[in-house]
Image 1 (cartoon, rainbow, N blue to C red):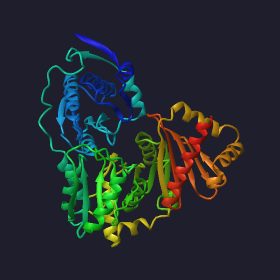
Image 2: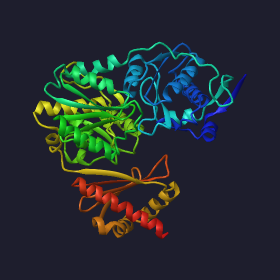
Image 3: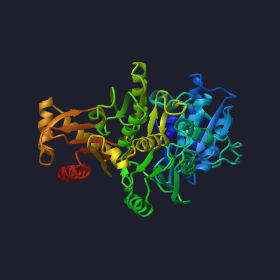
Length: 497
């Protein structure tokens, strides 16, 4: 006996959202039934576009959250139900399972909640040729699936089966970088690897050693730690500075939970913001054209390093769409990166070894390695490498418990009227902080450039009751202060209304 369920209804009933990042929600809401249904809907969509049929293999992997093995088993059951064969890649980075899927020409999925706490989890889906994009998301949400009678009253599988024998995808992922950079690329460098609970921690350690560097293991945890590369915890800032000082490290390397977003600290233990690592990586690789969200550091334009810079809305699907457009325009080697540091390679590129194949999904390893290799090649520290870029600094924070409707109302209020009226209104609101408003950008939210060079960017969150604020200035201290004061003004305005 089967039960027909629409994905749109299931989203509403379960509270498990489905977007271009895949499915994401509370572990308690991500029952086997919900995960099974979303996986079936994904494969049904791929069947509609000719990327899945019975007998086709589907790769599956997960991060180190306690709930990941159960969700992986539910997804594997869905793959088998749809007539697919499961390639169990185990617990490996998101880009490793994606790279395997792209190389094999098969779909893949990664069970991960990325950087969010472990009371939540998610499933990220990849097509045979790249990430799920907006049109795919809409098509998956429009699916209805016939669920078999496999679940108990709690929505859990009555019988569990082993997922499948393990397939080694870590070795080719490691070889991708060793073959490209060579076994002496990090020779002479003493590098700390902040392991915490990142699924790619052992791969990072192996890579440092395979590339000739000295690897120092730091902070391994058997309890899941939600590391957000865009909002580094104060304790992680303090730890990095302590480790750098006590151990004489040249750099500290880490990633978020599913190891698709990098964390890189210099020889002083100062974490480098992800969008700046993206610029350094793109420069090191000799990239010609860059796609990056509108919220990222403007040093990418000011540096004059790239023939084309395409700004996008925030989110990897928009970055990928812009990368694809740059490739079609014949702009040469093309990459993308996000504020979280995730680096996407749209075209193959030549490097010292055998070159690098394209990997059009967020990757943490490439930006870390390319930046370190470039610093070693030049014989400079990471802080000195960073100083070669224009001195622009960004900061981001958010107002929590700020309803989406209120965020939208604020943006609508600020941007209505003629351009002159908008600039006058923005100058009136923020002028005491930053002077006269000179230009606005509505690519994603409201980005205001002031005549003195400072930037304030306000954006309602797409998936939480939050108003995000991104600021940019000519010093890190100024960017942070500007962010704090901007949010204070908005908070005050909310209290006055």
